[in-house]
Every structure is written in C-alpha cells, then in structure tokens.
Image (cartoon, rainbow, N blue to C red; front, side, top):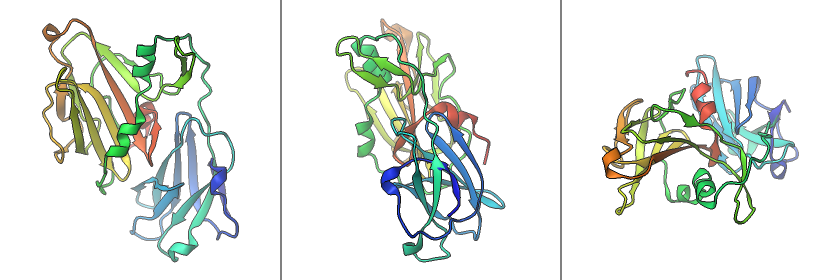
Length: 271
C-alpha cells in the first residue's frame, strides 16, 4: 500500500491491494488535496473519497485528482479508492492521505444577520443534480471585479446565540453596477430567483464534480441547461438606483459534495 496524505478513519479497510502508483501530492489548507496518479490507459479512472467521486483531470502522462475535504474533518488517516479499470470493481486500490485543516482563530462576534450571510446554507445543494461529464478547466476566476472578502474557513461567533460557525463562502459587497461572469466553462444547472427582490442564485456545473454557486445576481441572462464559457455574462449586481443598500455577492465552490475555498481553485495550475 502506497501512502500519500488526507483523512477519513471510518473508511479504513483491511486487505486492500497495492495502491496505484502516485507521482505527486499537494495539500492546500482550505479543503483541497491534489494527487497525481499513474495513467495506465485513456479510460478515466474512478476515484472515490467516501461515497463521492473526486474530480479527475487528464494530463499527458498521468491523472490529476482533486479531492475536497470538509474543514470540520479531524486530522487522521483516510482512504481514497481508485479503480483504474485494470481490475474488477471489487479490487479498488487505496491511498492514505493526511489533510491540513485551516486553523484560523475565532474572530469577534458578528451580528446574527451578518453571520448567517457569511455561512451559506449548504442544504440547497442537495436539490441539484449534476450531469456534466466534461473535464473542467482550471483555474477558476472571480465572478465579478471588486474587493472580495476571502474569509473561507474562518470561525465566527453569532453574537446572539454564541454559536461558533465556519465561513463557507467568499463574498464581495458593492454599491455599483457590476457584471457577474462565469468563473469557468460550465453548464447552468439551476437558477433560483426571489420574486420579491429579483435576487438570484445561479448553480454552475463545471464538470466531473466541480461546481459553483453564485448568490446575489440580478438581471440574469442565462437559463438552466445553457452552456457558458469562462467569462460569459451571467447577469449583474443590479442598478444602484433600484436599492437603498449595497449588494453582496456570495460565491461557493464544491467538489465531491464538499465545500472548498474558491481561492484555492483560482490558484491551481491549468490543465
């Protein structure tokens, strides 16, 4: 068994075969582990962390694997299953990984409304079905120009309840009309619009388990099922004359059903 580094004690299994050779591995604090594994054929391998498939990208001589790790996961030993299609499904290969969690200190208490907005409700993701099997393109880019609050992983306290929350999005607040664009090539999976405010959430499927949610879009120009390229217009932040307060955009990124820091996906090297 070849050892690399990540987490998931409840997945440990006995009597596993020797692991598929691993050429390189990088741990990104913020919820992403990147592996490079041997390419035995042009058939995309199935790589699973827990119940869900990791993001697999093709390189000339190897497979590039991106795995999302929940920030609440404790350090420890984990197993990633790899089926390179050279054996039967009963003979998954395994790799042990060690995850580097973010260790930011708890910040000053925040108002309930502000904390609730920074910590976006993840349950809405369960309503979405993603079917884009195309290889995603990297890196991602910011969905709007401006000063983004990159606090993913920070701990905040609700000043009313005292509950400690983990920020799971990045955000940008503006008083100006700003275009909102696709962070990368994608299929629009869903558009959810508040009929009273006109504010929309746009779900983007970048391919093979990599997704974006952009919340706070007005004047939406896309529909579910549309294909968009990187930089394509999705809408804007709304006309300043139509509101009395600034608008805040929230951006979440997700892989293998885990929210990860968008800042990491903006820094990853191209395919």
